[in-house]
Image (cartoon, rainbow, N blue to C red; front, side, top):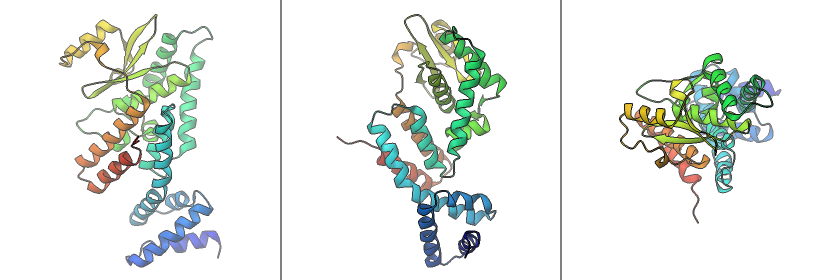
Length: 281
């Protein structure tokens, strides 16, 4: 039997309600995935039936869960040096059919376009200004306003595809692109909002992704915090979040989203991920 007919036969059986049939099909698909990586994603793209797509998604998640959580655990154990790597793994845990190369290429493209806007003599603040203009005005990225978050607001590939996200997600994307330009940025959290901080011996300012990447000096930032009714406006009290803590914040956000949606299975999934990457000494 050709691979196309074999795949079609297995997909047809995924519509069966017999648990023993579904179990056998799952084992067959997983074995095929081990031998030919990407077959599950190919099947997911080709099928249109909602029930079959849901079952394929579940099979892929179950198969890749131990693989991706182990890689995420190692990333954390080694110090979480590259934010993009941890976020990419977490996004794959959310969506096993995430197009990794497409997402990586999109980030490289944004970094390259920002670099082209400057000159070899451009200082950091000029490069960051170019990045804000590119992301929020030319590319159309925006903070998603609303009372509730969605999973897409904190996942790397979804933010790039939808060009909108939460302040946490947008700050992480901005910081990753800045890092590709050799500009270190800090992410801080003030109440329920996240901001970017640039700090050097010469300059100290903040970038607000809620306001199209607008820059604020210390005084302007203190005024903003007072307008938001933040009691503690001493900016040095807000410590930068490490890459590991940022990933933990994303996990907590995903768990909260599942709780708000009353999806208890999904909530438990993210709790299991948090437990799987916990380091015990």
